[in-house]
Image (tube, rainbow, N blue to C red; front, side):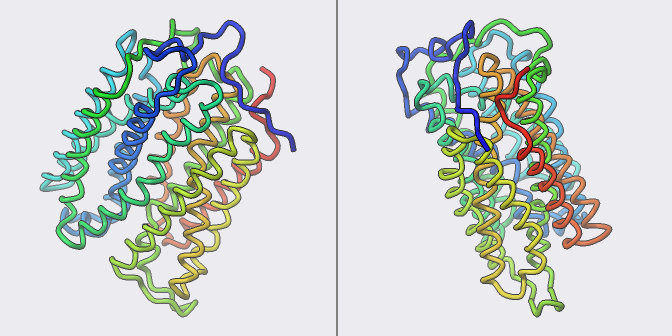
Amino acid sequence: MTDTPTRTVTAGAADPAQLTAAPPGAHRWAPVLAVGLVTFTLVSSEMMPVGLLPPISHALGVTDGVTGLSLTITGLIAAALSLLAPTLVGRRDRRTVLVAFMLLLALANGLCALAPDFTVLAVGRVLLGGALGIVWGLVPSLGPRLADGRRIALAMTVIFSGVSVASVLGVPLGTYLAVLLDWRAAFWTLAALGVVCAAVLALTLPPLPASGPARPGGPFGALRHRGVATGIAVTALVVLGHFAGYTYVRPALEAARDDVGGAALTGGAVAACLLVYGLAGVAGNFTVGPLSGRRPRAALVIALAGIALATLLLPHATGSVVTVLLVLVLWGVSYGGVSVSTQTWVRIAAPAEFEATAALWACVFNACIALGSAAGGLVVDRAGTDAVLLTASVTVAAGLLLTVVSRPGAAR
């Protein structure tokens, strides 16, 4: 099985390094770390309801399935806007746009913290989806603009490390805040973090003008590359499966399992399990992620196989906390490499269209978060947590099969 090595620029393509204020070939770590903080905040904001489903549901008088729809609302809006982000932003400096929409993210989280009922919470999540959509539509294309060719893979790993670190610090700390104080404290913290991100971006990012004129067909035009189309399909399947299961992992861990001699975990124990999962995700990001720069298909096969196996095993591993943790470590390490690996796949399939493919990837990623959490909610409400984890495993396994028979550098 041979992978296509990472390429950054093809003949006739604009050199992303020339689009920044840095000298050609320079690598500026402060902006890369700043964007990593942004991805941490984005994911923490979007996924916070995962760790707070029961307390939010109880406070607002709705079911866990209804509360799970707060992820669906955010994801659908983020998906639509991320696809349109390059067009909506036009020729505006990307730095200015990123700062403005991180402030909108702060406002949205503040509204969620104040929500007296699900309707107001939903409005806050709508605003959050708008902020996420524009920011996610631009962020995946920043790696090639902030790093030279030799360091793009490392820069992308650092940028997407925020996704994994959000699982370590974001959702688990939000869960602990809900136990110690109130679930609203988690959203207030995210609001403050959004303001911090806006300030850091304003101070560290170089000017980021538009990458060039719009190409025919927009982001969808990139699908004429077979490697891009395959990468987008794999991204859809793994994200659908993962979020169908992960959105409802807390109810799954809290459910008593008499058939395997298990007992329901408490809120504190669940938070500890999610913390272990997040630490494993960081490890996966910095191991599987860099591998994707050299062997993108191998990296994706490892990631998808681990997720499919973990979601299949988790319902049968609740006989003890140790087995639960082992399965969550496998799941976390595997999913930790998904963002970098899938984004690398679509980028190297059409390197001359890096902003268009990044917007398309972000659209599909966010849409599938929404669809996955919605589908998981339907399955949970009708068939329970074991069924939703099995559904997740089968969906990710389909993505694994497609990855095995494909390659990112396929001909157009």
